Structures are given as structure tokens and as C-alpha cells.
Image (cartoon, rainbow over all chains, first blue to last red; front, top):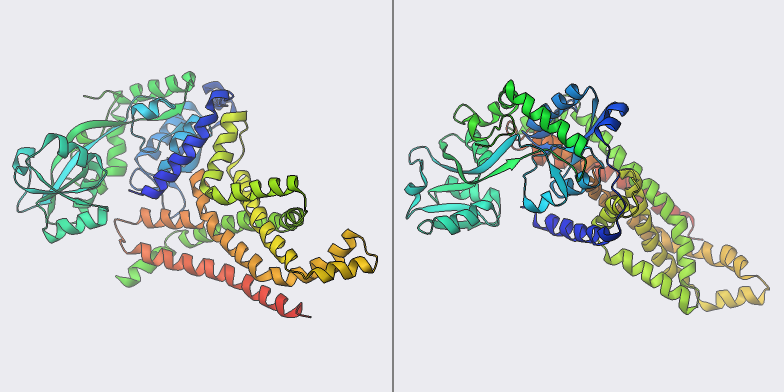
Length: 276
Length: 225
């Protein structure tokens, strides 16, 4: 992870949050104001394929964008996209500078204090990728074996707490960890399932034997704290879209190519905002 | 493999998008620089005033801007103004504001050091000729400092052009961000794209900053006497 960026962002956040005691009301826009204006401002990633990216013609694409387009269409408004970075997502939603953040935004209690999350439309857990000829299909098969992980990730926390018999081999960067797996320095590698699924798809000879492990994190749209009219509209929209299996269609249109036939959409997609 | 990498530059409107990103970079940095130079000259003159109060004010301003990473300043201006006062500043305005504040501080310090490097007898001779303080500044001192200032000012402007890549954090899509977008959109098909795109960005920055250096050299030679 980009540590320097996170530290800088944390410093910036603490400074902007400090004066919150005498804060004015954040100028977010209610549903009526957005509809009247005719344009909804949606914050998305512009360099995180396949969730939010810009194609060669300069158009926004991806799983989050597919939903953003539909949301705007059903509200009867145009979309104006803002390119967000991981570190600026909370501030953008909290200050109402965009109406909705749809940027692969994982729901956490800390973030929920700053912004209001709508119903989830995706979920992420850990995945384990291993060589095809010695696949790891269950966590019990890892006992006594060497597992590659990246420091500071949820995988490190999970395996340290839940699997004491697994030998952990820790790396600082994703590139190093993947090289270690390619060289056979470990038996398997674990991190977010979205990451390993995409990697296994372009690296023949490797399979994701476990595609959903550990705590399930949900990914949801976020709006400014207290923007209830917009939050309710998004929740109604997500519930209604569940009827037509919209997010499976979204998966087929944007993620299926990247994750390949081996991946199971059920490991990622959430329909109607209901987590099983 | 190698020609595959370069070909993504000509896919769709990729190259035009990079140039568009460069346009945003130049817009923000050159407006900031254009504001910083006159404001910096004024601030530099203000810094040389021998008065404890003005000294303290200029010291605090300079140190505050220097110590704060520009990233933090961008966050404070862009998001902080909304949280504290409910002002919804645009991201480009916030960026220009922060970079002009930074440029004014840095430029002011350059001007200050150039001013005090002018020998004392220049001031005294002007006074002996009966010139006022303002006449001394505008007719004797500033013309002499300008030449000394050129190399450092150019250094500051080119640094500003490069530092504006931080503005992606407040949602402005400039040349670096466009590059990252292109690399990422193609990361599954062209894993080597990064090298090519960053190579192109290198040349874009180079051909932006190089002419500025040439003009500066010419000016420096012209003003030598």
C-alpha cells in the first residue's frame, strides 16, 4: 500500500477534522435539488480497473460506473463524474462536494461516522491463489505450509489470528509477493479476492482455490452525513434493482472478462442490498 | 512486445487526453506562477522592513507555508473551507490559491535574499542623490536584483509545474493522472504500458520546462549589463 500517501492523508484529515466543532452545515444537495438541477455529481475511481476507470476514448467505465449510469437514468438526471483517490473519498462525500461516492468504498465503522452508507452492492473477502498442480482448496490444507502475504493487509491480520499453524512469509509490496509465488518460495498467496482473481486470470498455471475467506467486507455507495432523501432514493434503487438481478448483469458486463470463467459471481455480487 | 507498449498511445484519444492533462497542469502552474512573481516581489520587500512586527508576520507566514506539505494545504483549503465556513470552492481555484500562496512565500524569500545582497553603498548613494525610498527601490535596487533572481525563479516555476501533480488528490485530472488512467485501463492487456506512458510524460514535462530555461538564459545574458 502507499504508506506515504495514507500518512499524508491522515495528517490532512486530522487537520480538517479538528475545527469540526464549530463547523457550518455541510452544503450537501438533497434529492429534490439534484433532480431540479438535472445533474448528479458522482465520485468514482478513474484508475482502478475494472471497478472505475477511463477507457481509451476518455469515457468512464467499470462496475461502479455501470451502476452510476443506471442510478442517474432512473433518477432522470445526467451524471457528472469526479475522479477520486482512495485517500480523498471520505472527505468528498462528507463535505458534499460530490453527491454520491461510488468508488469501491468498503464500509467500516470509522467511515460510517463521517458519511452515510447506503445498502451494499458488492462484497469482498480474502482469496487464496496457488499453483494449479498443487492447489489449496481449503484453509486446512495450509497447515504446515508457507503462505505469502503482504504486510499491513487484512490477510496478515486474519491468518495471524486464525491460522497459527500456517507459516507466513511477509512482503512489503504486491509485486514482490507475486514474484515470490511465481518463484515457488511459498505454497500460496492470500490477499483480497478481487485482486487474486484478476491476477490468476492473466497468469496461467495458477488457480484461486479459495475465493471467499475471512470477514466479509461490504462495498456500498456513500453520501454526506444526514442526506436522508438521497440515501433513501439510493436504497430504494438498490432494492428495486435486486428484482431484475441488475448487479449480475453489471458483473457480466464489467468483471466477467477480468475474473474469467473460474470465478464465481456469487463471491462478489450483492443483490438487493442483502448480504447472505 | 515493445511496439505493443507504444501502440496504446495511439489507441482512441489517449495521446490527446495526455495533452489535455498537460494543458490542465500548465494552466494551474502558470497562473499560480504569474501570481507568485509580483506578490513574491512585494512580499520580499515587506520581509526586508526592519520592524519586529512585520518581521514576525513574514517569518510566521514563510515558515507555515514551508513546513506544511502542499498536500495538506490543498486538503485544508479545498475541504476545510467547506467544513468550517460552508464555502464550496472549486478544486481548480483551491489549487491555484495554494500554489500561489506557496509561490509567494518561496519567491518572497528569494527576493529578500537578492535585496540584501545589494551592497549597502548602493542604498546610501541613492539617498545621497536625494532619491526617495521608492525611487531607490524601483530605479536602483530592483533592476539589479532582477538578473540575480532569474535562475532561482525559473527553478521555482519548473518545481511548481512538477509539484502540481499533487492536485489529483482534490480530484483534478492532470497529465500524471491521465497517464495512470491509461496505464490502469490497459494493465491486463499491456502490462508494460507503464514504462511507455511515463516515458512520454517525461518528454512532455521536459519540453515544457526546457523552453522556459532557454528564455531565462537569454534574459540573463541580455540583462548582464
